[in-house]
Length: 263
Image 1 (cartoon, helix red, strand yellow):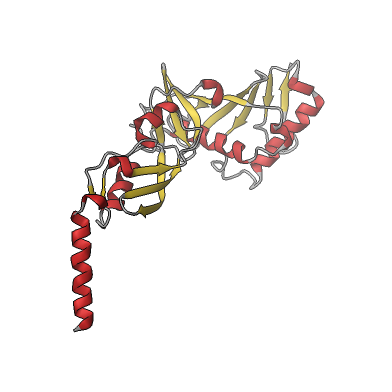
Image 2: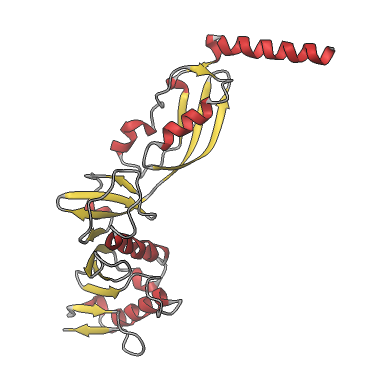
């Protein structure tokens, strides 16, 4: 009987608190923690560093944290909600995992920012082209922000993004210490047949570097194909410092003719 009475008292107290204005969470009390500095200002102004617009509800409402998380996930720059915390008497705090742009896709005058998973972050991006590699390829119109590129209809873009992401992961290789990739040009049948794109890197040295098929797309390639090609690029850079005097560096040949240069 005592237990039942205490339980009833607890429920009564909680319900009363839930109706009290003191425990009502309004939009101003829903905060997002630590938005990374690299998130563009225009994205911040859409709500990431401002309260999420939700109608006032009790801090005891079990659906409130989920509603706040769902609202945050509508923003294409948000990859996941890492943690949700209630702050008594009337606050909610969200820790978010953000998507980081790795490339800009060129489609006419449009510049489309995408992350390493080929998710569109924004159309007509205001991110400076000098900050990210520009992918130049023929592809179907890009989907809306928050939608992943189609691996078939947008194969050329996806394969170029895969190469950019792979090179970012290999950033400690000596061949990349003095090179910065400005753009990736997609040729061949890449726009029509997935896995067949012929990728060419254009670096800040303005020398085209033919890479060939994107990493992981060629079944005949060795497991360490990326390091192998970068090693060969490094040899070319040692022989021709700054690649001065060269018109092209070709990394598409297997065996003992990995690097071909033409004056």
